[in-house]
Each structure stands twice: as structure tokens, then as C-alpha cells.
Image 1 (tube, rainbow, N blue to C red):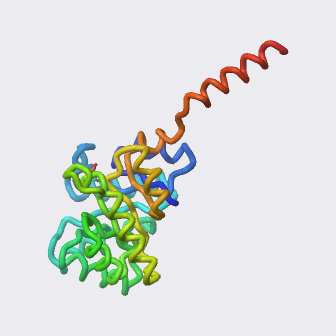
Image 2: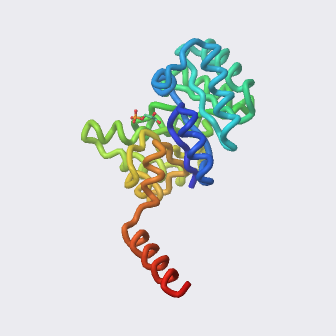
Image 3: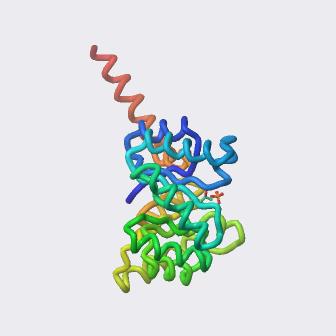
Length: 217
Ligand code: G3P
């Protein structure tokens, strides 16, 4: 199972990389804007800065919503760095663009996926990753994890190689549940990954070990 962080914040990306368990980064236009990264040139430079910090895949999202625009932008993004994965929205033109990039050997992440049918189309188009947004489904009283289970079943039925990238992960239990359901990747805030560390019995046990060591030394 791969762990990605879902942020454009370089400090958090460095922290996640230093933890030693990071496999990649996802970003989107909202996350870029949150960090104050605006203007095409600055956004492109920021993607390169992220690639220079992490070892794994870095999803970079197109803004265009027409096929030609997606192809032009996607090719520019892919040429920035070998770690870039072109992120495309789950719309008709996005599916066509995913197929185009797949035929050219350029990796893609089809995003804003909220149904099993959309995930099936992304796989048929040869997407490298599909990003079902589980937190946003939970937000509207729909079980996001159920979508992960449906996609896993469908992909396994036919041997689709598209990796299920559970996105809009909000907390640690989402990660545990995605792991049980067989998601290939999760992407979430660093806090959701660091949450996996915590257990009071670990802290109590360590304090006791250190206290007992001190008694004899
Ligand atoms: O990875 C998708 C993500 O950026 C959306 O997360 O928390 O805004 O629903 P969220």
C-alpha cells in the first residue's frame, strides 16, 4: 500500500518524506491556491520543487476542460519531471485525454471520481490511478468506503491494473479501512498518516522501559 500526502505545502512534504514512508504527493488547484502559489510559471516551478523533495509520483492537475487543452497542458506537465503524473478530471474529455496519454505511455490520475461507473471508465481508458473522493462522499451521507470496495471488486473481476488511489482521506480510520478494503494508495493530510503512530500503551510502555533502565544504570 502506498502513502501519498495531499498537500502543496513544502514543509509538510519534507516532513512526510523524512518520516521515511512517503510514496508520493497529490495536489490540486485548491491546494496550490491555499499555499499562495498562483500564475502558471510559479505553479510549474512548485511542481518541480515538490518532485525534488520526494522520491515518488507527484500528481499535477490540468486546468483545461477540453481535450486539446488537456493534451497541451498534460504534455507540458509531464515534461517537467519524470515523477509527474498528469491529473485529469472525470469528464468526457478527461476520459479521452486519459486514453491519449495512456497510449503515449504518460501516466495519469483520473480525479473527482464519485461512482463505480466513473472508475470503470477510467480503468478502460488506461488510467494509472483513479481517485475516488471518500471524504466528500461521507460529507453528503454516502459511504465513501463502500465506493472503494465496489471499485476493488470490479477491478479484480477483470484484472484492471489501474491503481485505486483513495483520495479526500480525512483521518487515520479512513487509512485503516482503505487498507482492509485493498486500496492501492491513500492520499491525505500528513496528520492522518502521523495518527497511525499513536497508542497510549506504547507511550506508557516506553516510559516504563526507560525508568527501569535508569534504575539499573
Ligand atoms: O485528494 C483529494 C483532495 O484534495 C480533496 O480532499 O478534503 O478537500 O475533500 P478534500
